[in-house]
Length: 306
Image (cartoon, rainbow, N blue to C red; front, top):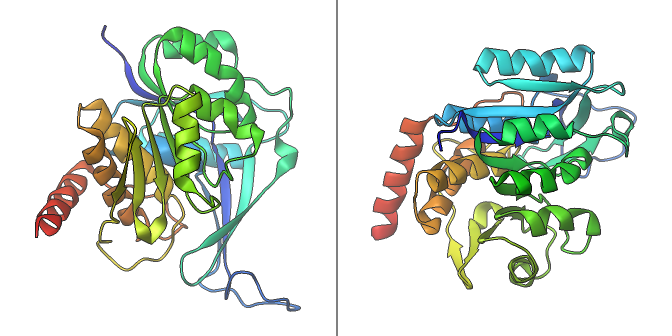
C-alpha cells in the first residue's frame, strides 16, 4: 500500500516560555535578574517530534487542538515555516502553553497551564481515521484527547509509538498509552527500577520494544526479552539544554526503524540525535538533519569499535 504520510503525530502542539534561572530549584528571593532573557516560542513535544522527523526526510503530518489565539498563531507559523503539514482542531480553551525553567546545567522544570484543556476534549474520530488510513505510523503524545484516539489508530492498522516522558511506572493515566503502543519511549528519571517497568510494559502490552532514556548514561533497550545498554553519544558541541532531547531521540529512532534498521541501530540513531538536541538552546526549535545524523552514527560506530 502506498502511503502519503510516514509519521502522523497526534497531540503535543503548544508554546513554551523559556526562563533561565540561576539554579534548580530556584532560590527564594524577591527577584532574579534573568540572562540571556525570557523567550516565548512555539514548540512542545508533538511539535518537536514532527519537526525532527520532517528534518530527517520523513513525510510528517501533525494533528492537534489549537486555539484561535497568539499562541496558536505561533504554532501555525512554526509548521508553515518548516513545511510540516498541520491539521488544527479548534480548541475554545486556547492553545497549550507552559513555562520552562532552565538551569545553567541545561536541566529544566516545566510548568504546564492546566486551564487550556478539558476532560471532554477529543480529536474527531472521522478525521483521525482519515489521516491514519494514509499513514505508515502514528506517534501519539500523552495528552488526554490522544488516549481516545488510540483505538481508532489500532483499528486503522498503523503501528503506534508513544513517549511516556517521566512516568513513575505507577500512574494509571499513562497505562493506556504504554499498553497500546508498538514502540514505547520513556525517561528513566523517575523510575526506581527501569528494567522492571520496561518488562511490565512488554509483558502486559503490545510493545515490540521499550526504550528508557537516561541522559548522560545513554539509554536502555528492551527487545525480544533482552535488555541492552546503549551508551550516550558524544555531543557535537557544548551541552546547553536538555529540552527536546527525548523528542529528537524518538524521531531519529523512528526514522531508522521505518527504514528497516535493527533495533539496536535505531537506538544508536536516537542517542546521536538526542546528543545533538542538547547542544541547541531551548529558545530555538532546531533539529538534526539526515547528513549530520548519518555522520554522527558513523563516528559513534568507529569510536565504539575501538
